[in-house]
Image (cartoon, rainbow, N blue to C red; front, top):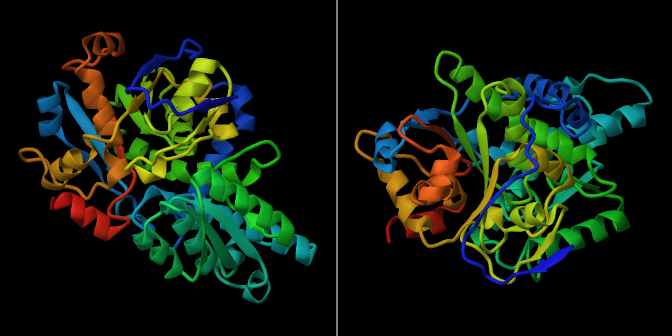
Length: 399
């Protein structure tokens, strides 16, 4: 199904298909605890790995009228500035491991790829992806780290700063006219023509293996949160920003699996200029949305949901909602300064989307009442990126 952009005002849609039971066995084919455990063991062994901070923002929470905000700050992840570092690079590693095993006709330990034992072979492989910036940077990082070539496709609105960041990691970056979905189509076509491997966080019919690895990689940050909260109350509400939905579904999966008996509510947040998931929820099936105007939240500007992500979110999400761009710069400035004694953080455009959604939901009496947003509420928000384009970030912060 395809829906054209009508620039509707931000909206809410409660998911009547949410299932209130433990993470179902039927979803293990989409993403399982085995997948997430394997990713955790591997990624936590990488050079430079360390957990990112989980920050309590009680002053901001008090201003909003809730008990606490847990904010997961991904701005320092592997020096790449976003959570995406956990996914794309892991997908590259899994691809090279599989290819070298095939080439050698024997099993090899994945750490041998990580440690550069087969650089004479990995250098002959090419990985490609389409990106708004952060995912491509992670794939380029993985290619450089594990010793293969990389080509990245970006659309016309991706900033020069983000393009240069990928080129600094030795990726060849190709700019395509149109939006993200246009760049993805070109990426797929050229990968097929040249026998290159796509490492995409977007899954579709016939392409699910590497998006599953990427989603598993993302869950490392969810496990970090679980570990840090072991002696603290769990969140009552989790606001999850979504582009194609891979990140949101990965977070939903692991929290659902671990906290399934605590009735955590999962709220999926999208820009009103790219609402493919809320449109899919309303239609009851994956729906492609025609993006006609780009949102300031560049990493969320996606018109077609990931197949794997939709499998999880259609059963696990409580609410789908959209936000517009108007509060994003103001909230970025607020986060950089901090409220009261709260620690200021470097929050990029996508990082404040969950906060914008929380404020919007709390200020809507009917929605707040239905979600039980009140003085006992503990909300988990994700700072999914820092200043991934420092020039743009500084311009916004200093406006």
